[in-house]
Image 1 (cartoon, rainbow, N blue to C red):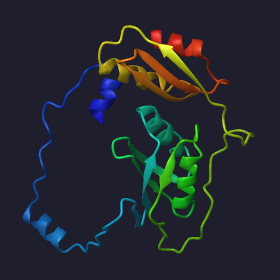
Image 2 (cartoon, rainbow, N blue to C red):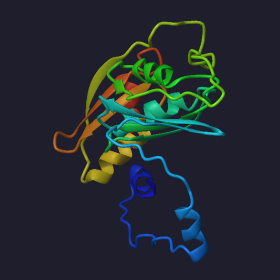
Image 3 (spheres, one colour):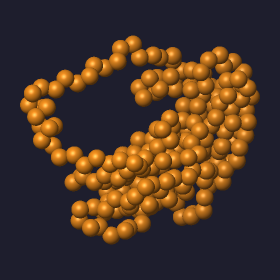
Image 4 (cartoon, one colour):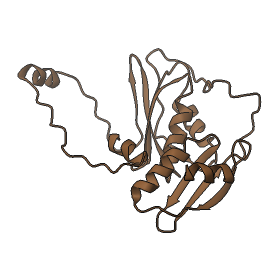
Length: 214
C-alpha cells in the first residue's frame, strides 16, 4: 500500500527489503495455544463481532481501477456508523468495521451498491448480530444536502500524450480521482487515453484536461 501511494504521485518505487517475520517468545506461544479459536470455513464473506464493534467482509464486483477503490472508501468512511474501511481491488473485497447499534451488513451492502455510477454488485454470506441483540437499523448517513436523487454522471475520453510508463498512469489516476466531481477514471498507456466518469454539475472535460496537464 505504501508502494502504491508513492507510485500514485509519480515516483517509481519497489520494496527493497521485506519486513521480518515476528518472532514469538515462549510466553506468547503458550498464550496463543490457550486462546480459543472459532474457525470460519467455506465462505468468502465473513462477519465478526468484538466488544468494540463488528466487522464484515464484502465481495464487490464492478471495480476496475483505483478510483473505484477511492470512491467506495471515501463515501463509506463518512458514515457515522463506520469505523474503518479497507478496499482491495486485487481481491475485489472490502472489510468494513462498523457500530452494530447504528447499522447492519445489509445496509452497508446497499450503501455500496447505491454509489454512483451504480455499477457495483455486492454480496455478503451472512449478517452479524451484536452481543446485545441490537435491532436491524437502517444505515445512518451524514447530511449531504436536501436532494435525494443520484448525482448526474457523464463520460469523456481525453487523449493524453507524453505518458511513458505505468507510473504516469498511476500518477494521473491518483490525482484526478480526487478532483471534485470525478466518479471514476481509467487511464490506458497503450491507447494514450483517459476515460473519466464525472458529475457535470461539478466539473467539465476542459477542467479535467487542464488538471491532467498541470
